[in-house]
Length: 68
Image 1 (tube, rainbow, N blue to C red):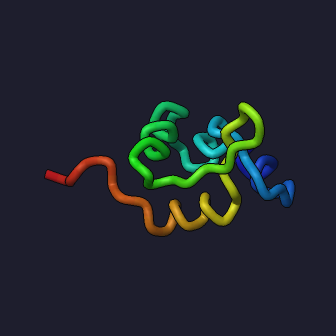
Image 2 (cartoon, helix red, strand yellow):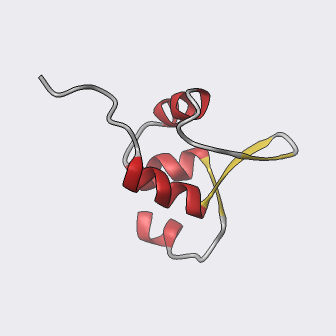
């Protein structure tokens, strides 16, 4: 499923699609947006995330918790 979402050569993805791609919950994606760790594009009422931003986050994202 993720390959079908990513392989479509689209530029913008919804929060739910990004959550699927990054193996996170939609709520975790929303938290990352609110913490300014993930930049968004607003189109009307829709919150979209650019493909380049998904790649940047997946390479440079901060861990959610420090390992013990």
